[in-house]
Amino acid sequence: MSSSGEPSRKRPFIETDKASTILCTVVAMDYKNLFYRVCSVCERTLPDNPDTCCRYCNFANSFNPTTSGSKRLFRLLVSIATDTKILVVIMFDRAARVLFGCSADDFFHFAKTHPYASTTASKALEGEMLTVTLSKPKNGNAQHLRVVSVIPMRTDFQPAIHTLRELYPP
Ligand SMILES: [Zn+2]
Image 1 (spheres, rainbow, N blue to C red):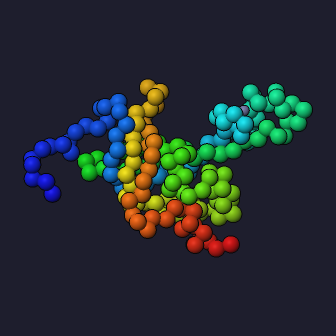
Image 2 (image 1 turned 45 degrees about the horizontal axis):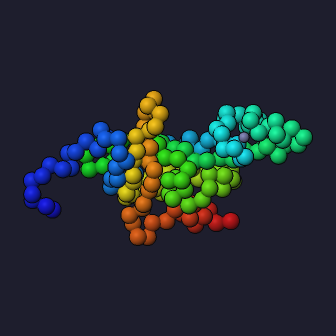
Image 3 (image 1 turned 180 degrees about the vertical axis):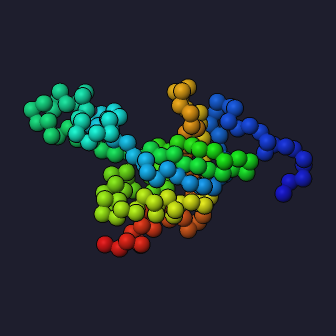
């Protein structure tokens, strides 16, 4: 393309603290761990055990403990290829919803009746070209760059849940 000889593509975008926007392709995703549970009232993270209630909101709901529910949010690891490397990034709910086209709870309930939904969704998204904005995790111990926004590049991109509903009609 440009013959200016400027080696800008070698710029190590991970070294900066600013968010950086890159073009990449989805290589794979960890479809076995797509969600985490949070309290439906305060959105604090809950343990994976479905019987545990939020210990903060449970007091407020002690007259009727069953109303303190939980919901799922997306949190998944995605392997992406840029023009120079392959890296694993973490995608939280807002970004993942763009790719899945539904809430994590909706996807979970769909997957309950369609056991291969997660695998199929992952396969459907593989090879998808995306513009992603990556930011360094605020927590210095977190090991993966975080995807703060996703824009699918294909004009006829369709979220995974649409592909699934076509494959598994009701
Ligand atoms: Zn709570």
